[in-house]
Image 1: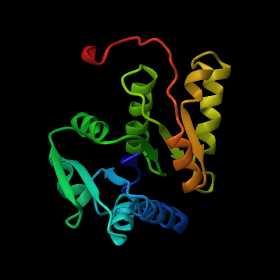
Image 2 (image 1 turned 30 degrees about the vertical axis):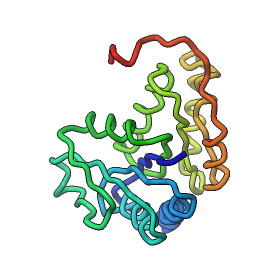
Image 3 (image 1 turned 135 degrees about the horizontal axis):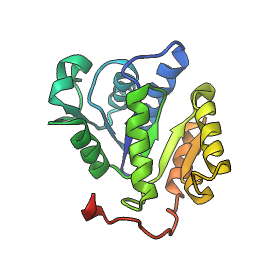
Image 4 (image 1 turned 120 degrees about the vertical axis):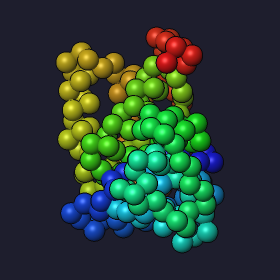
Length: 193
């Protein structure tokens, strides 16, 4: 994997562990020559993961809609900042630039971006690994909800298995490297989206 998109909060959350892990993830990317693709801001976990990459001489590419440039405060030290017109264009560009996706803790925006990417994978629009770095159990309840979706017949087991989870950065990256997308028939083609 040459580049990974990271979705995460534009705040730090209530526990210093989140910032520490975001920074460590960025440093790990740089040491493993993985380029960071992220939301382009210098605040919260977004800024921490970018700063982690940059602190080890790695590359960080931000994708930021014009209307968020002042709200999320664009990171001025990253390798490249790509400005786009909309949130959808942002996700599309981030998908185009990456070989996989990792979600760190965050709020509604993080979940919306993450679920769109895994939905695209479920529909067969890409075959990239989609992963959650489950820092200190942050995503435990979400993982339980996904199991409930399977148990209640709203999600196929094979699609549940597309979600890669670990609380270890190294283990998560290894799972992503070894990921093979399910060979389920496509419901729609990429051109129909």
